[in-house]
Image 1 (cartoon, rainbow, N blue to C red):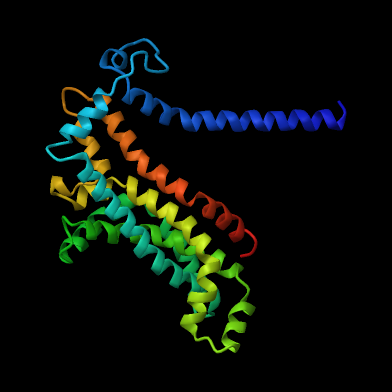
Image 2 (cartoon, rainbow, N blue to C red):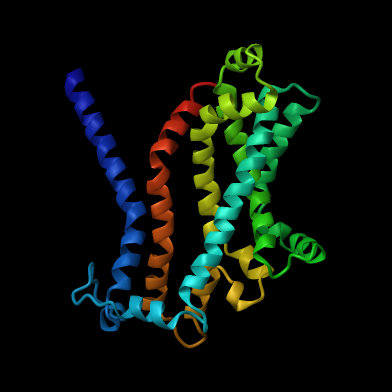
Length: 283
């Protein structure tokens, strides 16, 4: 076999593997959306039905009009949006400041701090559930979305700091030194020089924080007691009872829950790709 044919076979094999991985990842999402528009007789059947034979808006309409557990589905989506956006905004500010300090300044135990960030990521959230519950309750944040935001920020912050550190380190120090020579103070240098160059990386980390906070279930179920304050992942549990499961309602609500994430991703995808490439140059 000549080298040209071998390269073609290798490329074809890699493309086939990529397509297989893509289909494996996308199929659950497709099945969720397809089930949301299937009538009950097509959902509760032993036959394999790859797509709705008689599409219906029954499940989507029922979720939108009747709501979940006596509350509108828009209320749960709004609660999830408040938690996700709050986590992104608060976490981004602290992550950028901490990443700038780690990347630009030399201080004692700097390396230990970076290693500690990785160690924190290895601790499962379930192991900290009881201590966090007691802490949130003592702070008076129990049954409030603010308490959930604080917890989510704590779990997304280490990864965001570690990732943003790479983007900050990729910015040449000479740019900040030139701004200082021109008379710019530290705040002006940070806002006018460093922040615009690190913004793509900030968008990339915000994607991670948004999706993590949007899909979080365990802490939302533990730290929130009022049904009207539940987030959307917790509200999905009301479609399941001891006797039956409303699969049509679950899939319809899950499809509605996926739309804001897709919209947020499409809104920032260009900056996310450029940010990931820029952060890979140095660090």
